[in-house]
Figure 1 (cartoon, rainbow, N blue to C red):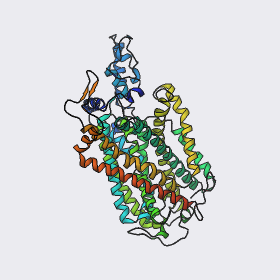
Figure 2: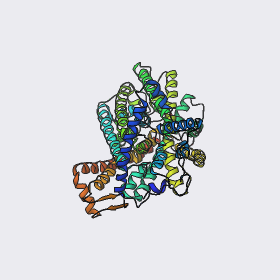
Figure 3: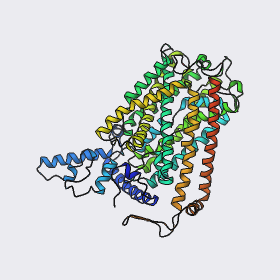
Figure 4: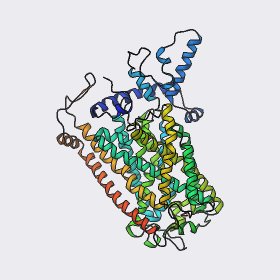
Length: 581
């Protein structure tokens, strides 16, 4: 018997067992492999023109539908009979019943409609991850907080663990996702392993993180715009301008449509940090005012660099352990992209290829962080603030760097808004208030109406705490660190325990729709844990280590905000005209 086909209910039906998810996921992966084989045969060898055209494509499923429509038009022109099933399936949408209302929609038609929104390739995923994760501007600040040696070591370690978390989410997605029961966000994975309470907890945290990430970008771009205007525009007005730009650009709903934007963002980022390295290497000087007005450093001294932990007098956000851990928080913020990986996978034509985009993106990002951070720190030393583009001299080059960075931040904020708004729409408005699906006309109109409210809330948060280092460190420690490192660890333990606890004769029977289990409770979980006890123990320690780092990081972020907004700190105030830089 086919589960309910109303989208949300089928996906979140609590009566569906773990074994049933796994059963349909195996079938889904096999069908994807066959579809990909046919797609590669029809596409032929890749050429430059095909790659460029693919960036503006609506996806292979839409292209196949257009191909079928052309074939039907040719048949009609020749007076040949038209397949009624194809005629009823225009624009990739399937009605709830065939022309004969007594005939239910077929599995093939349902799957075609469900797959119509899965269009992204692994190349698109590489650019999406890179745009999401690549926060190169704060890399010199990390080195200024912890020194060369710890900086390089921590970037490698945290990068490797971020990749490990991505691998975990990829494995769980492949084992549990199908078009019958699709995984669409991070919270869905927890629902299928730990139950509804875990999903609600994760969804609230995910929505909050994405909202705060948009707030950080509004704040950062507000500072950039203020710098470009030579502080002649009220700082709050600069943030309002950024908010309005986001409202207009946020109308893009598909990640495939964002593919070409994120592609451009990666190359713009590369151009930007090359310009900064040129400015640093050429010894053009430092804009000390940007540092003095936004950090604890209040004097102009010769540039100092350190192999180990810098002394307190050279810490920018806080002194002692809090100052050092603030740098670690910024590193976590830079690597924090795992929260979006399930959403990326949910829009992939062939999720098996996700590892390619993940590996390429993480290696590229790690190398950029280390090279750029160490290089710029060598020339700017203790003046390497997190928004490094504002200390660049001469002013003409600083303006060019700020313009490019402004554009890349707009693209990143649109990406965060896209995923964040989808999460809120699906988890709140569709489930609680029964709003229509976002792919329908009414759903699109509601998306356009609710989007500006999302941006206004993000603006209020950004205006209330006008300190980029402080708010980004808090978001990194409290939310991003847990979603990138803590939660994937405990998710994988639960996944392995359920998968490995199966006994002979157990499993899901598609004929009867019944799942057979010989036992349950802690006995079953214990048996599953022991089967791969080494990996499960490591993931448990990984989870506990993430919680410990989150606690220390949150404390360090609070301490740094207290010091920065105290006597001798930043001149910026909540919703004020004075810019922090």
